[in-house]
Length: 176
Image (tube, rainbow, N blue to C red; front, side, top):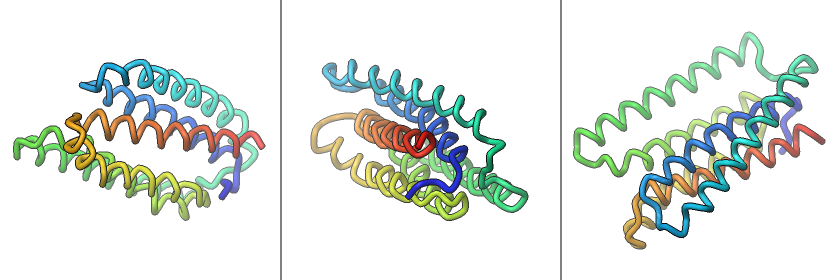
């Protein structure tokens, strides 16, 4: 399940760390008070993973990576589709008066976009994180409703944990 190249695993750690921090931040919109310290810890750990991942990426990129003239543009197209779908869904949900479901929608699209990236980048472990983030999105609204929590708290924390776990795992791949 390792990435073919250390640089790709390290870049994944950096990206997952940054976005893990973002999701832990989003979870802080209206979480239970007891969650706040844990969300802060998750944010700090995500930042650390992002920084270490960035340093290792810079140091290993020239040793080889899976981004080339074929995969680079395809990666860009996949990310562009992700961004457009996230934005369109968020706008639609806002206009429909369902703003609280925006994090659910965005987590779903984020999770789904990892599926085609796994084979493209030669990093099968991305499929694991794709499944986890997608599962968080699919279950998040129901869990939030059942526990009388905001979707942003449930989905933000769940996605943050999944991305932090992915970042740590990617760092282990990059460093071993």
